[in-house]
Image (cartoon, rainbow, N blue to C red; front, side):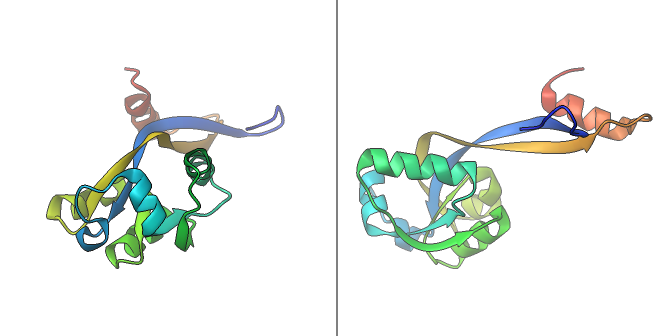
Length: 143
């Protein structure tokens, strides 16, 4: 949120679904979301994030208290922890696309109703950068 005195402009770039993703040996086969959440250690975003708030709400609605193996405040660390087998990560599949393609990680379950939104934060400029304008127009779907 911003106020009237804020110089920042917030540009929504993309929204990505979020899943439980982990190494095949942790995920197993044919296990439900509830089974995974009850039995496997999880790698989660830190509590101060919107993604974590959404996950905590989902777990509470399901009556599940997850086993938290680790918390991280950036996607790169969540990715690394999932690759190393610290637990099953709550992360957008796009962040670990290479590992999913290689079979190093697998998508155990899509978390319905939970998504991660990516933003660009800029300031109003008297002489805007034309390259940035091109990128933002592509992301926002405007010509």
